[in-house]
Amino acid sequence: AQEIHLLRYPDGIPSPDDFSVVDVPVLKPLDGEVLVENIWMSVDPYMRGRMTPRKSYIPPFSLNAPLEGHAVGRVIASRDSRFVEGDLVTSMTGWRSHALLERDYLHPIPDAPDIPEQVFLGPLGMPGLTAWVGLDKIAECQPGETVFVSAAAGAVGSMVCQLAKAKNCRVIGSTGNPEKAKWLRDVIGVDAVINYREADNLSDALGEAAPEGIDVYFENVGGAHLEAALDHINLHARIAVCGMISVYNNRANASGPANLFRLTAQRARMEGFIVSDHLAAYPEFVREGIDLVRAGALRWEETVFEGLENAPNAFIGLFDGKNTGKMLVKLAA
Ligand code: NDP
Image 1: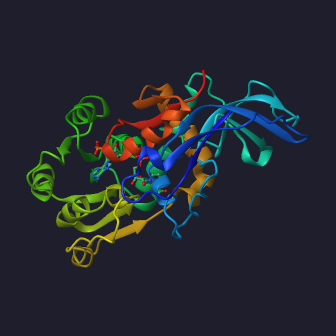
Image 2 (image 1 turned 120 degrees about the vertical axis):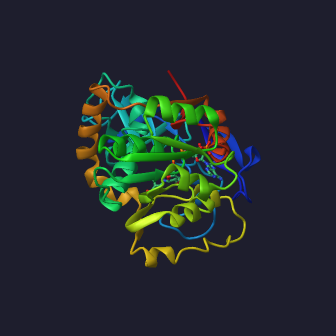
């Protein structure tokens, strides 16, 4: 078996040398344990926060130990009567080929054999739930509103765009890549796309795309995106602060948007949220999501890196926009 360890906390943008591939024996399950071979693992921007030795809403990763994250695997041996060989399960034991687990750490994937299992790491997994909670519960998005979504072609963003379109909202998405912009327009159905790398001035570009202002900003990026959004918020707008990927690799605290006072002037609300506080909503979300997939009403894209040894490159690629939709690592067939 193999595991990926973190050797040191990255300084700035993570580099492949911060990680190592370690060979370990495959252990046999003892009574009450289940042996899982991972098939897919997820790499996610939040993991960068755990690669920094400072307190946050989850503790930092330990050095010289296997990293953690969502994974889908297959049971290959079981000493727990509730799991049998061949069962597909999700767990938090990504970044390794095999994991020995007790049942509390294993979750059967939802019973929908017509949906590929890795979808439960993306559109119908944690990123999908994040989109659903952020748009509905935090931003309280209403039909007909104008919604601006940053990192719109990513795992969370592409779900937010589709959920907002399903509410008959006008949706403006931003991305840094022309192919992703085309996918957002042609497949995801957003009304206007801003390529933030090509725009001379992000705020002007948003003003052109949303001449009547924005009611909801789904914040995934931070920095100049937040400043642009604040410039165009309407009265009583809501900003769901999901993430700020543009600052995750910053070495020192960058200076914040100069126009935060616009929140006051516009009586707008900006609220942070963490998806793990909303896990109780997962069954409701996934039921709705499975129905949408079966109705052909939900689109997704995956970017797949092959092999556990490529997991660090997949993770680093998130900060360089290498993914459209969910970034995944395929470990086994
Ligand atoms: P994505 O699939 O969106 O991947 C990251 C994307 O961000 C890249 O593909 C890239 O797209 C864009 N990006 C990277 N660096 C920058 C930058 N410097 N400026 C602008 N865009 C950048 O990731 P996720 O969907 O998994 O996550 C999206 C956001 O949601 C992140 O901020 C993440 O931390 C947050 N999140 C928060 C959760 C919560 O509970 N609050 C839970 C899950 C995610 P492009 O090519 O378009 O630049």
